[in-house]
Length: 103
Image (cartoon, rainbow, N blue to C red; front, side, top):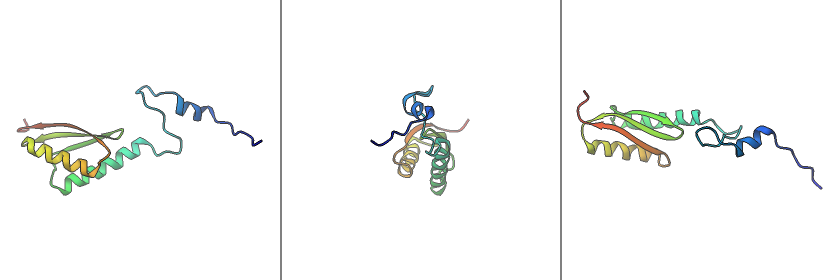
C-alpha cells in the first residue's frame, strides 16, 4: 500500500475556510491577486491611452475593473466600456463614469 502524504493545516484551511469577504484563500503557489490586478490595470490603462481615452481612471479589485471619470456623452461611455471589454474579455467591468462637464 502506498503511504499517504499528510496535508498541512494551512493547505486544508486554504480550501475549506472562507475569508471574511467570502472568498477562498489562494493556493500558496498561485500568483497573488494583487499582482494579477496590477497587471490587468496596466493592460487596460495602456489600451485606453492608445485609443485616446485619457479621461478615464482605472482601478482593479480582485479582477473587477472599475472605471471612473467624467466623459462628454453616453456614447463615449459605451465606446470606453467596449474597448475595455475587448482588452479584458473575462473581467467584470464596473462603470462608475459620469456624463457631462467636470464640475
